[in-house]
Length: 172
Image 1 (cartoon, rainbow, N blue to C red):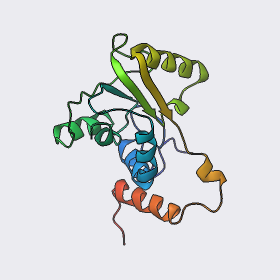
Image 2: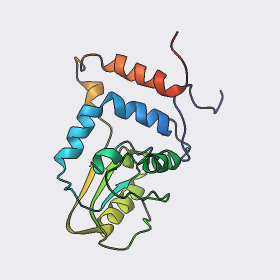
Image 3: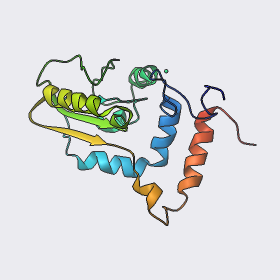
């Protein structure tokens, strides 16, 4: 059996299937209304200094601002964001920031790839870099979509369309 990723399921610098920027963007687009509602419900305020830990391709960046690192940097270069954004590559278990720097930390679909002890270290790092009284918010896989029936209308069609659009394959 080949160690190559499945067609359309790209691999990022982490080496994990389904973590490439194109695939993550397709997933984000398929669930955009739900993800935007989740992020808005957290309570992040305009003007806050926010860390998007494990940002992938930067799909949450436009809303936070009213290879993956390259995609996020390109979004910044294109100027589609309404506030200053800096993109850094590093480990969420050893964040390269001083204590109490951010008003909030947002982390989406990232901790699930870590071992338990790494999750503990990452959450400790999130608390360390967040100002007292700030917000640490984490969103992980929406398991309920796989368990609840009936699923939202057109869920599979939307996922498939996004996967095709971002995989580089043209429709026939």
